Length: 362
Ligand SMILES: Nc1ncnc2c1ncn2[C@@H]1O[C@H](COP(=O)(O)OP(=O)(O)OP(=O)(O)O)[C@@H](O)[C@H]1O
Image (cartoon, rainbow, N blue to C red; front, side):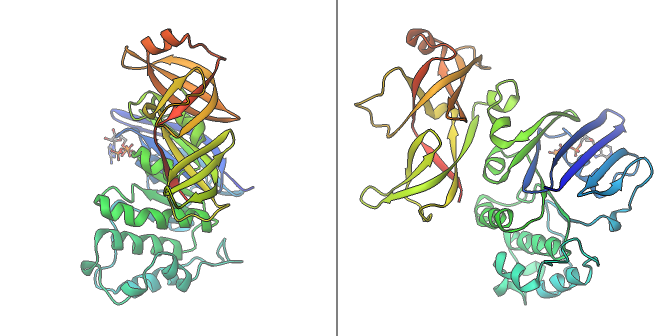
C-alpha cells in the first residue's frame, strides 16, 4: 500500500506548528482539532502555499518537499477544495469542469485510470447543472461543482478544508452522501479538515488530532475517538463508531439489523442492502450498564461487553467507561454513584444497554 510521510514546522509570532506523521495513501484522514490548532496551516504546507516552512512531504515515493526539494504548488499534484467554492463566475458549470480537465497534469499519476468528466458529472449529480452559472447555484451545488473540478485535475491527493462549513444543514445533508461515495469509489487519498465530530465519524478512516500546532494522536478513527486519554472521549457528546454489516430488515417493526463483531443492533429501517458494510455511531451518553441481561426493558440493543477502562469525566459526578466487545470499543458515560452501586471495575463482564444507534455510513 502506498504511503504518505509528512513533517512540517512553521513558526509565526504567537503560533508554531510542529507536526509529523506517516499514513496510508488511501481513504480519508481527518485533520481534527479546535479552531486555531493549525489544521489549515498544515493543509497549506502540503499544498506548498506556506513559504517559510521546514518540511518533508513524500507521497507514494514521490518527494514534494525535503531538505533539497521544494516543489511549487502548481507542480504538486493536488486538488484543493476550500470552504467557499470559488468557481469561475463567467463560465458555465460545464466550462468550469472542462477548464479543470485542460489543467490535468500529464503524465497523470492516475493515468492508467484517469478520472473522466462523464463519470464525475454522474458521481456528483451535476448533469442538470451543466448549463448554469455559479450565481444560479445553491451553496451545496456550488460545492459539488468545486469537488468535481478538483477531482478532474486527476490529483494524487485531495485536500478539503471544511468543505461543508459554509453550508446550511440541508445542503450539508445533501452533500455528505456524495462525499461518502467518493470515499468508497475513488482511489484518491483525502486530507479532510473539520471540527465537526459528526462529519469525522461519517467520513474518516483515520484521524490526525491537532492541538496548539502539535499532533496529539494519529490513528484509525475509532481508536482515536475512544482513547480516554484524548479530549474526544471526554466531550459530553463523545461517541464511538463501529463498522458492521446489514443482516436483515424487519418491515413489520421498521427495523434494520446490523451485526457488529460482538452482537447485533437494531436501527430504524434503512435502504441498505443485506450484506452491505455500514458504520454505526454509539453516543456515550446513550449507553447504560446492567450486571445481568435485562429482560423487561424498552431498550432493544443489549450487548455483552467487558469494561476495559474507567476514567474520570470532566463532570465530577460522572465517569467515562471504555467498553470492549470482541475487538470493537465504545464508550459509556455513567454516574459515579451508579458505578459504585453496581460494583463496576476494570475487567468485569457486563451488559451495555444502548438506547439509540445511528447509521452513519452505508
Ligand atoms: N496568515 C497568517 N499569518 C499569521 N498567523 C496566521 C495566519 N493564518 C493563521 N494564523 C494563525 O495560525 C494559527 C493556526 O491557524 P489555522 O488557520 O491553521 O488553524 P485551524 O486549526 O485551521 O483553525 P480554524 O478551525 O479556525 O480554521 C492561528 O493562531 C492563527 O491565528
